[in-house]
Image (cartoon, rainbow, N blue to C red; front, side, top):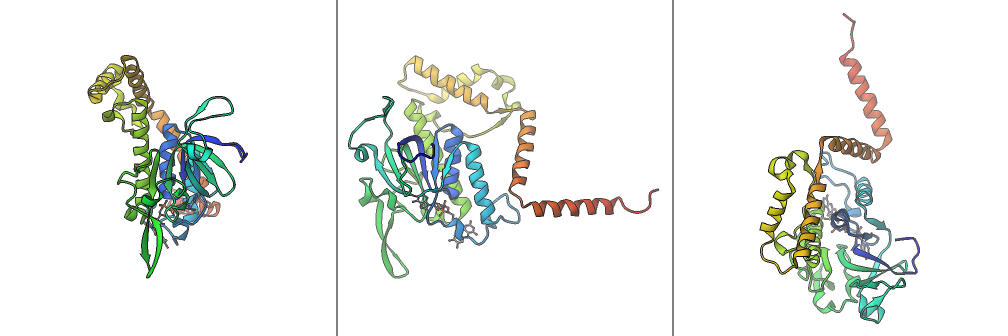
Length: 322
Ligand SMILES: Cc1cc2nc3c(=O)[nH]c(=O)nc-3n(C[C@H](O)[C@H](O)[C@H](O)COP(=O)(O)OP(=O)(O)OC[C@H]3O[C@@H](n4cnc5c(N)ncnc54)[C@H](O)[C@@H]3O)c2cc1C
């Protein structure tokens, strides 16, 4: 999307909220190849944490500012767009535009299900929306399911309306086709790592639905965002025919035409073989990843760490030469 806020732009997925839940969801949908945008501005829990000490992978914890910068960087690397703007309304496309199936300016059919409006007057079309703003559900009110979405809730003796955490099912799916909720998700929103895991899970459900809509038989529609070592593609699994056999067994009964079945099967195989990651590639990625981590560290800490390492090394090698 450009900085121009006048024309509607179409995305496969709009994620509302770039905290742990929304960022994780967007990383999965963008890495799959869906055009994904994250709008992130408004009340959030993550900025209220004093310091994150229980997010796995950070042995001494991580300060929230650095963690947020790493989330933003990860979104960019995954191919998702991050826009600092607040979503104020999500509407069904027909209702928002006053027409059932709108034709776009270039004459192509725009069958996006939603129109998303922001505080800074952006207006984008989206096929799917992932709600991931823990403290805000009000932007979903224009959808005509508001009665089911909101409930009265008592907090510190006062009653107020809130998004009903039981509106989505356990996988984040809702009665509104294309609308998924990664946050709020009741107790799954209460800790950052759980919220991130839930966001990723909801995105995988979205991807599964997307693949089923493309025609993949349900039994083989789940997407695994895995990179596999080259050693996994040796022997029988190095042969595309073995994978074809696997696909055909897993797919079971279906009513696809032969042509479509073959097309989807070959696409599945192409994706599987693209996950093959040889040792050179692992080495290249490792180097790139280490540099990327360094970019997020304070130069002063890097310098003092290096000075200390040099001092330790010279102490170890110190003394009189033999
Ligand atoms: C005081 C405090 C301390 C905490 N300490 C810890 C801790 O030490 N460890 C831990 O694991 N968890 C901690 N938590 C919980 C943790 O913050 C949450 O589990 C986690 O942030 C939930 O992630 P989320 O993505 O669901 O929501 P959020 O982190 O709230 O992210 C939602 C994002 O959506 C954005 N947003 C809101 N409305 C809109 C809108 N309309 N349009 C676009 N964007 C919007 C917000 O700006 C925010 O960035 C703490 C929470 C609090 C309140």
